[in-house]
Length: 362
Ligand SMILES: *Cc1c(COP(=O)(O)O)cnc(C)c1O
Image (tube, rainbow, N blue to C red; front, side, top):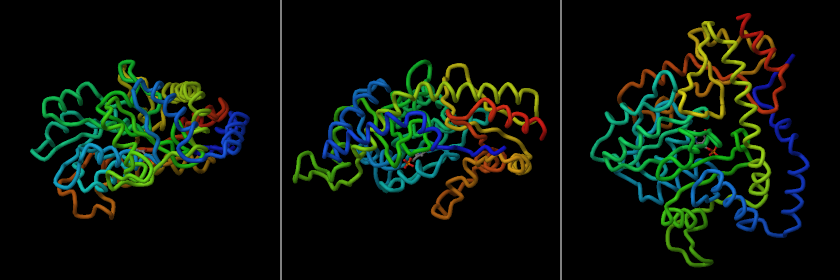
């Protein structure tokens, strides 16, 4: 038996007819950039996330970058980021000329440690970017309290958490603004690149709308040195279909996660810890063991594909050589002990049983 890490063809096959219909609608419209589909998707996703504005952009990295730029963050500013996130969180800070300052995660949830944030704040700190890593919300009330005390912005990186809830409130609505990604493998994935900014702040929303479109408030007038980073009509139309399936897909992920967690109970493979105030959406199901490489090899021998998220923390990447001076032992240790098991809404019960069987024989 073979279980791929993620079979996007089968994920999208479940809504194939609606996707084809969306494709047809866009072709027939004769309008492919910044049209009715984008407008409709932005309204639908803003409502889903319980925020006033959703602004579609080219990808998740641009969403964070344009948001930081809209807030005027730049050279000389420090922005607090998790030490164990995907590189894009850091790249966005670097792209606007600011300095990423790494804070280690809590060892149980893998999300940024609020006490570590407090300790990392300097006179130059302007913002915190908590990441809802693996689909589980960071501890936002505590983070927002630290931010309020020090007058800092809170910008959520919600790229892995579409549909996740914190004390019942959707991620994307929990800080000053949020960025998300519709990369095909995300919980809400397009059939290409895409991303969005979410906020209740009218001025920031307007600024991001300009920045994504050559800094232009109206055709051939340019108020800022903007970019071309738009969510096109085709992806917006696909995303409307995918959004209507998001809760069902997340519920299926939760079922699979529950089976994994039950099966791992009492074993020496550590399952993810979920505080009772979160509703995670299991973008990834990440286990932890000191025998990680052996576990990955064992599963591979049985045809089960796993991935490490992420094998090299950002501060150890070549692109950041020499930038971070203090050691980040938790991120470095986690990188050697974590392993992501297959989890996707299209996996069958038999797939899950097979994987559980092979976890038990390890
Ligand atoms: C995927 C991801 C991004 C970047 O999104 P892209 O659309 O791939 O640019 C940013 N942050 C996190 C945490 C991600 O997982």
